[in-house]
Amino acid sequence: MSFQRRQLLQILSYTFGVSFIPQNKLAMAAQNSAQPASPVPSAKAPAKHESGATEMEKVAGIGGLFFRAHDPKALGNWYLQHLGIALEPTSEGGTVWQQEAGPTVFSPFPEKTGYFGDPTKVWMVNFRVHDLDKMVAQLRTAGIEVKDPESYPNIGRFARLHDPEGNPIELWQPA
Image 1 (cartoon, rainbow, N blue to C red):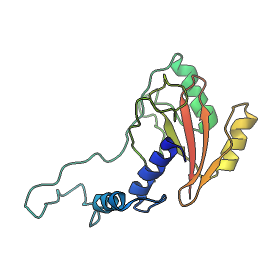
Image 2: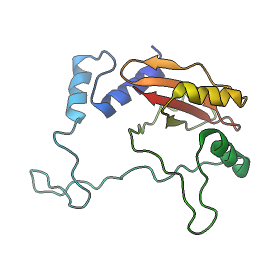
Image 3: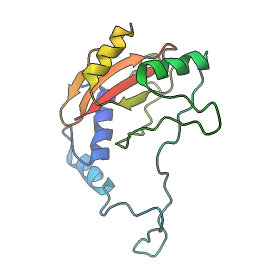
Image 4: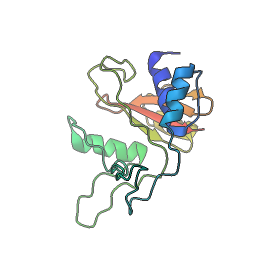
């Protein structure tokens, strides 16, 4: 198993609280200590630690993804046409893309990773999909090259592609 794929599986293991790959006792202990002992407290009332200190405020989610593009308008239209992601509102009262609730992995990768493909690309976005086969067929019909999906038990299926400017995209159908 490649280092990058193993790293992703470890991240997903920590996110879901289930081990997807064999781990040594030290890694299992680290995973168990990273799991919250109780549900996440409501954002309306700050939780108190046993020591009486107030718990750290945390972000609630990702509010946007902003990146540079050679042709922002054309690239935005590509995302709208092929992935259904609405661009930012162009008028007052316009709506933004509403994503469905679900797991989100937030993970820095090593600077020299080959996981994103082109070493000049510094980010990769992973989109959750309901039907990976249908999405892959839709993209291929539009002439977009998509690598064959790969399956990982208890995690799901993944397929990779690039937008017109070469930015890496991973599609994920959770298990």
